[in-house]
Image (cartoon, rainbow, N blue to C red):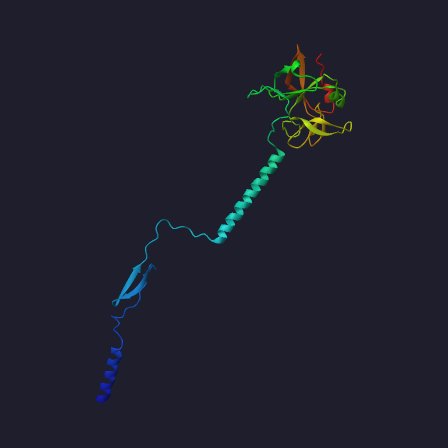
Length: 251
């Protein structure tokens, strides 16, 4: 019986001798916040701390989020461009008048709406035109060919046209180089008032022959005294095919 106790005691000591005491065993430890890594050094638990990142923490952006932002931004720009194009098509900015004709009147503040001197007869020979910016008027003096295309006007007669297109208000220039057929007489010749916005086309007398304009160019009341031409911009007559009858004889 004593031998059995001795053997059991010996086995117990042997088993104990093969394993270190619990107090001496080193167990890898991890910091509670995950910032460190456990390591064993000389039988003790060691925690290695990771340095904190410098600066503010940046938000995490996913690839899906980037694609969504790019899609909506691109769609917004496209819609804005389409909308701007439609607005400019319906309400175009005023186009500058050109055509190489004589231009008189350049004051910044136009006295439009009253009686405005627009030049003298010696400045306006037959077949020529004067563009007066203060009166916003084209002064047209017909030559033989122009009068023949705009009966019953006669050579030497003068008409004052409002330079605004009746369609959407664009300034209409004279285009001596532009040629087209006149539907009134089936003749093709150069020299027309041509709206740069939507192509409405008018004869020397402002008669509409093509385009979306609802009528011919409007006319002003014109008087000539002592060789001086004066336009009353408060008296505007709506344009019509009868525009040539409004031309006056300066003599």
